[in-house]
Amino acid sequence: MIPLPSSWATLVDEADERDAASDKFAGWPLPPGHVYGTLLNRQADVARLQQLAGGGWKDSVYKAAPQAPVLYLKTPNTYAEDGARVALDGLEAVELGACLGLVFARRACRVSRAEALSCLAGYVLMLDLAEPHLQVHRPAVRQRCRDGFCVMGPQLLVEAPALLQLEINGTPVQQLAPLQGLVRDAAQLIADVSAFMTLEPGDVLHLGAPLDAPRGRAGDRVRLSAGAAQLTLQLAEEWA
Image (tube, rainbow, N blue to C red; front, side, top):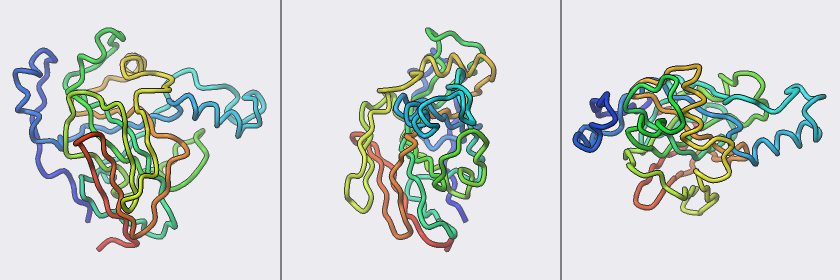
C-alpha cells in the first residue's frame, strides 16, 4: 500500500570512514533505524505556544517552557519515499511539515556538542505530515503516525541546505531556513538527545517543522526543494 524505500545501503560505523566510503551512501533511501521528530525547537513556535497559553506558562497545561528536547516517534508505517502517493483517508487537510533530517552514520551516546556532527552521514529533506492539531503536551500518535506520513527525500546531502522551499501545485507557499531561529542547533540537539538516549547508525532525527505548517488537500501535488535536491508527493483521498 505504501511505497517504502526501495534501495538499502550499508552504513559505515566510523565517522572518519565517511569520505573514503562515500559510495556506500549512494543508495539512499537508507533503511532508517528509527525516525524521531522534534517539537518546539523553533524559537517562533515556543513564543506562539506561550501566546496560545495566554501569555504565561504557569497557569497553562504546560506549566513551564520545555527545558529538554521534546521528541516524538515516526513509526515505520509512516515511512514513504520520493514520489509517494499518500492518502488523507478521511481527513479534510494535512499539515505539511517541511524539515531537515539528520542521518546518523555512527552511534551517538552521550556525545559532546563538539563531536556531535561527526556522528552524521549527512542530511535529508523530509515532509513530516500530521493531522492538524495544536496540542503538544501529549503524544499525538493518531495525528502523526498515519500511513505514509513521513516522506523522505531520495538524496543524502553532505552539506545542510540554507533554504527549503515548499510548493503546492507549483505555487511556492513557504520558504524556511532550517538552520536559523532554532532553540537548539543540530550539534546541540544531538548532544542533548544523546545524553539520555543512544542514537544508532541509520537513525534519523529531524530539526523540527514549524507548528504553523501549510496544509495540503486531496489532489494536491507537493514539492519540497533545496537547490538541486527535491522530494515530491501526491495527496489522494483514498489508497489505490
